[in-house]
Image 1: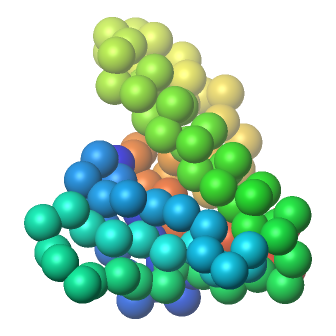
Image 2: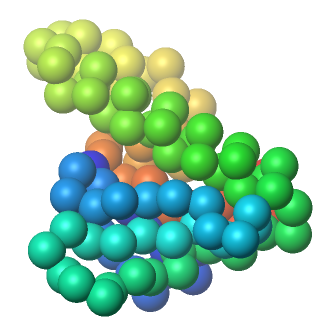
Length: 103
């Protein structure tokens, strides 16, 4: 699965990155194998919003795993139940950290 920064500048593979909340309101990512390479993926005004963004990331990862494990018929059924474009990205393996106002 790919994770994309809030501003769209950074794009990393989630499976080979460490993602955490830094200073209670920033989402940071560290790609494994790149020493001293920390990237700020999102900024939020509150700790609660940063935590919500992380929950959305975890949810997206689980949805992507379920989608990949499904057979073609089930994948098509899952795609038909998706109402929002953002959810469609989750099924496809892309998660972009939401803007402050979208939380």
